[in-house]
Image (cartoon, rainbow over the protein chains, first blue to last red):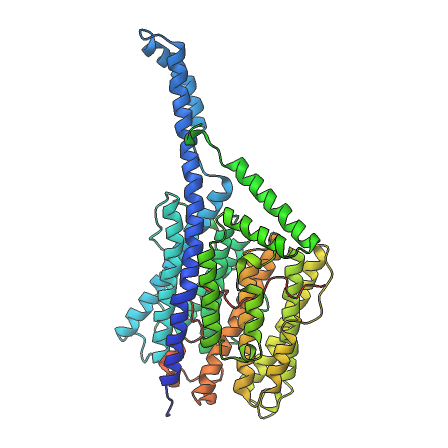
Length: 262
Length: 286
């Protein structure tokens, strides 16, 4: 069949330029805005902690003489120490929830990258039989987008003083590994990818209902439709109706308890 | 006073309350130009508006609309771009609609989508017996999904004390009408549907970041992904029609025969854009 790809490829390039010139900078600006707010809150928390310690030291110095310093510290420090430890600085519950969502999201994006990488490697090794070029391009593009999503969430975590999430969702990974062991062709791979994309999309929808920080909501809102688009194309390739639901469900949404090492 | 002793939380709360009060006043007073400038100054003072950034965004939108994917489309050719410039080119001049107004405006977008698909299905190459079965089924199913969206947005508006919106977005009606008059084949229909779906999706992404009611936000978010999926499939269909491969518009398609670039045409952006979002509240009940 004689099909010219030149015009199609040109349009793809144009869309890629729009992505890099407009949407990606806008997304990076959103993530940066949220990162700055979390960093400000963290600074405020640390400042209060320094004030508490400073107040404690000033109080001790005002009430005891030099000779009795050690004894006074011994007798007063325990009560002061307990009040300090009981008021250990922490971010607000809303911010912590947002950060837990960010960590979960990063782990899910890592899972997407992991799964597509496994699929691409299997295809290159000839383990999936004949792989159509469009499927390869799909996998490579989806993987790249998931990498960008993960990077956005990790930037936010790092700005909050939390470590970047580099692992895949710990609860889903063994399930994906088990399922991938059964993948022998591109149809199997597409079905596994579809499941992961649906989980990601539905998790973002669920998250949008609990997030507090506007920039966090906007970040999730800008990623969720993309995961849904991955799902639509996978459905199309698999021969199932590409847009099966009028409203996106959340039955497959993962809880933040999937990833707890914040 | 040292920086160590300053707790910014109460001030932030006061600023937020002030922002809410200011927005309510703007709506009630139907502010004129002086009040619009005042809003811009307030946004700048809170570093929520960078004039250089606003100018850059406006310029980028103009460039996109002139030369980008939607710049040569029906909506732009029929004046959509000019209307968008006047409403959205400078963020400082944008008013802040209520949740009810946003939901009503969402409903008005669904109305125009329903009407457009309804019209499309009267065309023989979309809804007729000789039409591609997948395209016909897509048009019918998508229209029904938009009907469900309309009902849901109106129910949500009502639950927040508003009235339903069953009229099409007035800013889009003449534009779509003009575009429909120029349709001569399936490619033009797909192009128009794609612009509407993309605009809807982008509008709902933007609205999700603004709506304050959690239930209304979740509803809008549950719809935005679906509109994005509609756009995704239309992008793929458009590419196959332009590539003179309508026989590949099938369920399942002959994947081996698909051009390689078709693998990524359905999701051009890692982060869904909002540059072509309609002004929130544009189609609210007047």
